[in-house]
Image (cartoon, rainbow, N blue to C red; front, side):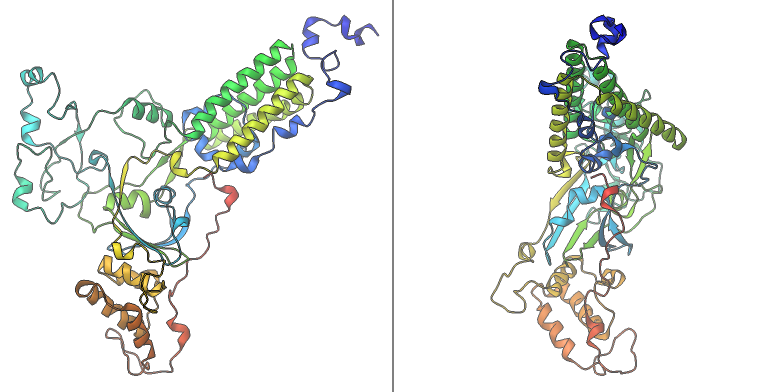
Length: 527
């Protein structure tokens, strides 16, 4: 029939024909497997799905390997957590997991068995944590004429921007005298009230945001309302995910242009549908992190926490209660821009577009199949390589300042540091003593199950707490061995004496409570 002759077809039909000259490769070869290349690499993409959808760049239309990794029946309400025993040194809070962002700041999997580390984590900008008060000299002394004389700038070359009152977040340092706290000085940029509930909070000052911070915040939470609030931990502007997103957009445009050059309408439709499907599912999964914050200004204990891993390593984090709420004791929740019902509708639309695109990919012309196949192979390799990068390159953690305060003698707790066969060899007891020496407390040990509550261990803990304030070189391992050799009817607990009974070595094993594996499946995590 004349209609079956490719030469007699209309120009529009020629664009969507796969049996015309040039549509097949040499010797009749075809790359129908390109449809398989489009859905291969789900494990690499699933590792980054939550990072990809954490900024506005997820709305860019582009091709993504294994887009079905985004097609999930439900969205995770919280960020993935890491299994470890975490205890508040002063608060007594005990949890079995460590938060997502906290594990990025100090990766627990990098801690060697029986190692010990001390970190101090504070807010880089105290305005983000509250507690800042403007000195009366700064708040009332800056007049219109003084701004003209200084070029509308303050003495520290930053603009005096007055914002709504900031509520003090915690008690003042103990080493500051009360008379000095209540008396403003000309050289002081701020003063902290001695009693946070004595008077209404004063106005705070905030440094001007840089262009990078503004662009970063807009990418995480674009809005027409200027609420003067930053997302707690946005995705960094120069994240590898963002760079790869721009590259994918350019690659998608190149494929469409290449297909147009060869008059391959099927390829244009297929790639366009895949690109728009990625935008639809990205919009459905677009989210931002929400960190826990204090809602009252009452005085609370310090937020220091100590983390114990399954391998017997200890990590002491010295921080305020605000930092502890954000990173440790609080919940890191996901706030999505699209509701649950709209999410299901968008998932259905994205699934339909993807299925149609897969059918069209198998009917593209030879040259387009080569270009599309090579593009997916390249993107799969880049996403796989991106999984090798540390997580800190994907998130902007400049909100926090981290200082390593590990004592010199405890820096190599996981290694043999002397010829002493007891005190110089790495052990759980020696590392536990290092933690007690830094915290000056032992109540957290009983609450977290770091040691059994037997008379022998209670005696050792009581002596260790006293030695932490008097003798930093206390022979912890040797003393524990001596106490364990004493019969139980001789060693009694000073708090709760019990009748003598047969000595059982099983109850002396430390730790008393092991770190149990978490039931979070790796396939559900996103980073």
